[in-house]
Image (cartoon, rainbow, N blue to C red; front, top):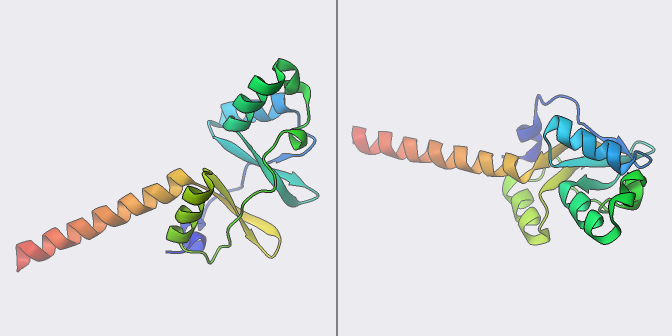
Length: 141
């Protein structure tokens, strides 16, 4: 299964701009109940702003960092994946790099955004489907 098939039919991607304040971006994370936002600059992915960024920067800088632009505290550059990549390749990349979100980029344009939860759900569903098929086969043999 490719990332492209996994993201088929999804709606708009929630993003923010590099000039968005940390306070505003954190509010978006909380309101949408999501763990990360792709950060855009001139229509291109500039980085990722995540819950981890909030925690780490709060510890390092104190509460004053909430007024800073996200562009100053985001994780950059963003690690990305292409739509044709396999789910297993993306999962492996996320595991190796110890990241939980991947922008899906095609010809320099972000076309999707996947989380490790999306990929793990796919794997669990596939394993359950294979197990059910095996049970059916055994019962009819």
